[in-house]
Length: 165
Image (cartoon, rainbow, N blue to C red; front, side, top):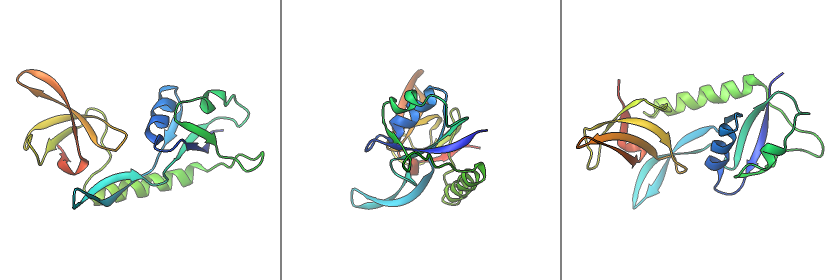
């Protein structure tokens, strides 16, 4: 039976831990929230972790070998109370995911998936099309576009793009 457990990450290494655990084949979930934060004197929407320094991880059995998880770069510890490892039901994780999707969509930015088309709405590449590749550690968008026949990887703030239909 699969259960969700909680992992605490090292300071400012949420994305690193999530990436490394995912590359090891674990199913990891880090809920996000879009907040207005000051940036160079202006309020800009930015995506932040809902629970900074915490990740949910789905595992089959509490008795399986946890050593690879504990030794993963970015992971601080597995959350426990004494010898008890608290778990979450799929229903709770599903509800968090549903609310996260609704919140991001109502604010104009649904989570993008690798290969999604995006349109750049501001800046020097205004009006250009690109392909979403991933989010970086600061939740900026890394996209691929072609300029003068050459592929180019660019980094954009989430507020600069809209999803192409």
